[in-house]
Length: 361
Image (cartoon, rainbow, N blue to C red; front, side, top):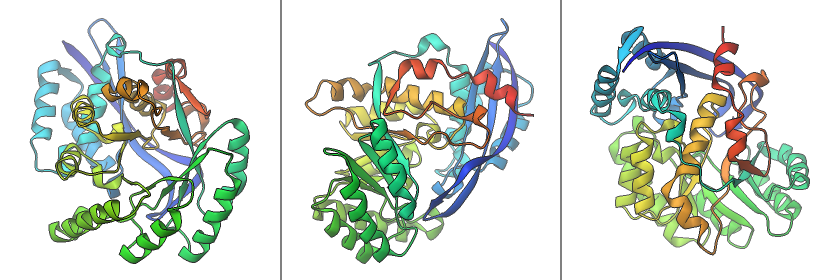
């Protein structure tokens, strides 16, 4: 099969800057790709890297797209993907671009349609600004909320934790996301406080990026494993499981907590999710703050995950998706699914990748 290959770089401001332990995040950079086959049928994908997670950069994606050229065939795309996948672990593997190219080649009929809707967790802003949205989202029907911590003074955030827990509807849960901001003492302080509160899990309390070297990464991995076994509140890995190698390493280590999976960052989504399902891992699918193109593919991966059917048949329902981030962009044409307590398969079908593509200059 021969394709016309096109790409468009984007830099889109968020409607409101996102405050995290990594600092304020005001705009999204990435690359949309389009593959048009000989019959004129177009497929779309999105490379939405997050470099501080350990992915490639948007510049690297654009350079690789430029190298691919305008006319490609299936063999060349396969060779490109295989060569990138065999590169040393790290950004050179171009996982986000491989993901985008795979999505653009996947025909719509290849997607499996599982249950009609899945629950969604609502993202709250950092600090005291979280209180009003929590109450508003609770009135809308949300029962799972995600709050960014490690942004302000720890003592102030711990006080605010009690205010947020008091404002939760009966039976609701709060997820805390530290983005790797804490050391051991601070993580232990939070875990002690959360033990008797309606906290579903704490996401990435500690993190050592690859730039800190293998020795520091091993120490941080050991710390996370120790904390996960010592305290009753579950922990979740996010920044620590950017790529396939990371997930395999943590599965081999017997991680007892939750895996936060951002499908847009995985080079080989199907293989990675099959591995997690085989291990009966606890998984939460999450947005990488993509446009509607990447959000559609990422959410479809969540619906098609093999472990979903097993979870749906169990006593406990599947964990709420981390897709409650919308409205996200200053220009709503680039947004993903409408914010609601449940994400329906029909919501994904209404997203139009071609419209997002055409909205870019």
